[in-house]
Image 1 (spheres, one colour):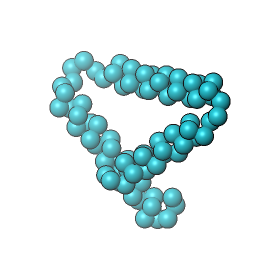
Image 2: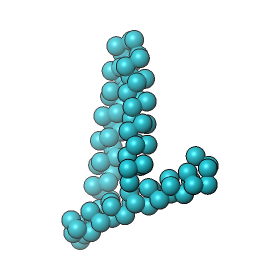
Image 3: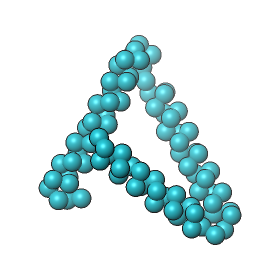
Length: 83
């Protein structure tokens, strides 16, 4: 799980570095608004696709399983030296 979070942190760090390197204030503002827009879209679509009859425990376990699947997929790709 640590590998997944380190890859995620590395990706976010690269995006933030490009934001810091942008000299133009308009470019920074544009990137900031894009991040906010896509975050709101992702969170709202996640909430809208949850069926109303699911409990909080089922939703939490689905999220944990999702991250475990992503973690093991990344581990398998690294094991076979594809990534």
